[in-house]
Length: 205
Image (cartoon, rainbow, N blue to C red; front, side, top):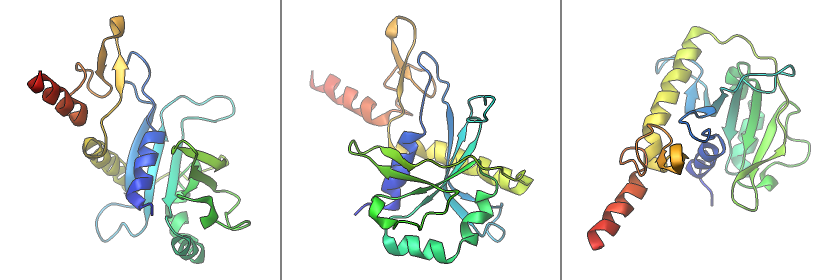
């Protein structure tokens, strides 16, 4: 059975797009974002927020905050439906809002709110939009939420190497570099698994 951590890892993968030849990532990723700062004030939590850094166009498709609720069981989803204000606490600051589930059968026809999108793993294991999230008109976020989002993004960035190796980017002459710090790949900080494998191979040779 899929866990919340499994789904968060899929979200990390979905929202990573490093421009070739650079260390410029299109996305900023933040797990477990509270609606405010402090232990007492942050009462509501979005499971995942992705910030799209690409400039918007005339239709406003980009430069947006995508909020996500992860539900791994039918019971979990029904609990969410019984308290719609839980999502609204952070959804009101988002440009798009998504439900993320390991299986589409968790959500029955007619249950998904009109202003939510639905992400489900496809045949290749990667998240795919079963229903596109419509563009919303968010409220201006207050400073406590902005700081909370920044703190969550920083924590997520520090912890990402614990979950996965960061992507490789290719510079001049197609030399592989770390997609985060631009050091030669594999980077021991951001690509520890590949680095450990390289050390093992070198030691055995």
